[in-house]
Length: 520
RNA sequence: AUGUAG
DNA sequence: CTACATAAGGGT
Ligand code: SF4
Image 1 (cartoon, chains in turn yellow, red, brown):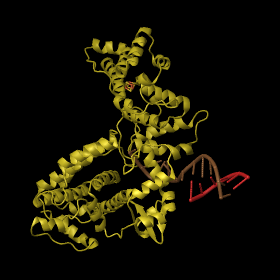
Image 2 (cartoon, chains in turn orange, green, blue; image 1 turned 30 degrees about the vertical axis):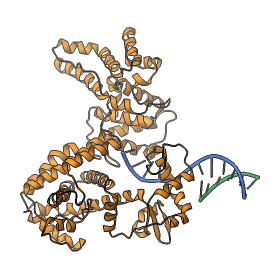
Image 3 (tube, chains in turn yellow, blue, purple; image 1 turned 90 degrees about the horizontal axis):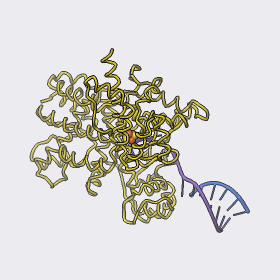
Image 4 (cartoon, chains in turn yellow, blue, green; image 1 turned 30 degrees about the horizontal axis):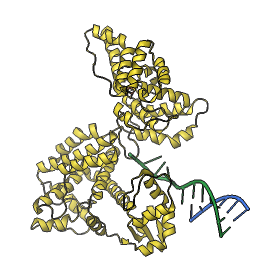
């Protein structure tokens, strides 16, 4: 089955050296074909599978990739992400260590991993967007799996790469003490500041980092050396010590190094696959399956915004967003006001507000136009050059157009409430929690809260930490006329409390729109 | 380790 | 020689 693939991949084998055909008992096959629990996927699959397997393999892997992508876009924190995905992978695509599972089953699961990766390459090689997304998610998966290998599995995998790693002895480390400390000072101190350095000593979160701390840390770290031409980019960016032609690479850089290689290699291969793809269509049995993959899942759930491909006719745009401010909940209103006042918002505020704007329908181009205008016009505002250099990336990142290309979802109230509280200079968060009653009153009046009795109720709710209830109350008061009209016309209105700023916005817009439609 | 000052 | 402070830049 799938002779077309087979022929093609046999042709490509030249690049990769000899391959042994499999035959004989599963045990031998595993050792020959899949000696490691992780792989750079240099060799395409050689054996045949049924159409059914082809499809389920691919779909299971795709599920994993989509779930990773979704969790990332919801802003799930790193350790939760690892925990959840580890479970899901165990269900959908487990990879056991050697000798912990019957050989037949072990072979089957390693094949599944292998096949599914190559099938998805076919589905994801078609466009730049898809390739980038695929690479970034596969690389994440690679890192996740690598970090869960046992020590000896890691060692074995590294050895198999035929890169001449050599472990550095303690005495050699001592000789290079000064250089090691100097070049890794930052890496290590960042680790300290985030309190994420595990290990033998009592590493806790710490503000001031000392050379002694750094040295302690490097001493505990396994360091390998290898001829520097194997890691030209590490050397070029002066991330490692080089001495007598050898680069000294600490273990914490090793995984990134592998992941980088993995990503680069995958990118090359995807380009090659794309060029070879037209010939594949001859096998008509594959077409529907691949189409299904790309139509069903990829376009809708996995793909985010297209760079530059935005239509200008979105309802909310850089020019008219002001007119929509009356639908903003307090948190968004506060951010908008802060932005007006300072021509600037700090990091978390930018994040919160950009995502909110994304939620109300502003595309990346309009959004960028909007932010640029807000940041660069008015007294004391920055220059366009500065904006482009220091902030543009940030906004594009929020739209999934840079870096890991995660299309983040607008934050919910719970998410907003779970972030660090704003300081004096910041405007993010939830006003019902973060503003004292005086400034909250000012804000609410600006939003149109006239009635003192209602205002008092809202302040009380805020005091008793029922922020969303306060927010819902404000919504009901400000929209009471429209709500009554809707009810009057027999239209149902939502009773549930506000749990998301964009929900607040959408309800307001919806109630008004419905009336227009009814009358017009 | 680098910088600054004496 | 001593004392002090500072430590980077790419894209969770
Ligand atoms: S309750 Fe939610 S929507 Fe309302 S202001 Fe607070 S964060 Fe915004």
